[in-house]
Image (cartoon, rainbow, N blue to C red; front, side, top):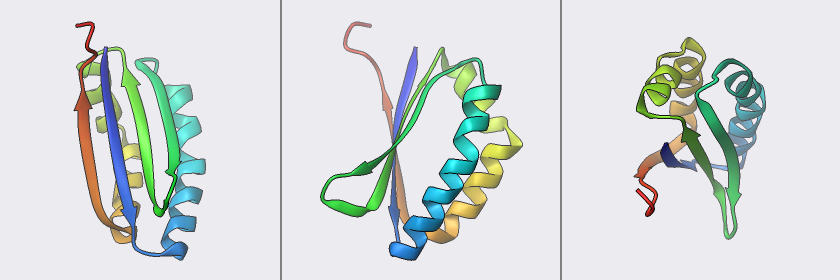
Length: 97
């Protein structure tokens, strides 16, 4: 198993609304078309209204590479670049490993 937490810090409320709309368009395709993606859950962060967090869990690193290689993923990230002040990815390893 391979997991990631990705935080997106958005520039303003308009950017946050646009980001949320992009997420609503993109996530269903990820869940339907990526059998190696076990969890792909976006969150708002309490006390940080301009931040979003994705919790992503994949069968393995190859499944994550397949996710990253999808044209829809690249298109999403291209559109998001103009909406954020920063992106931080944390690669996670379960304590049980």
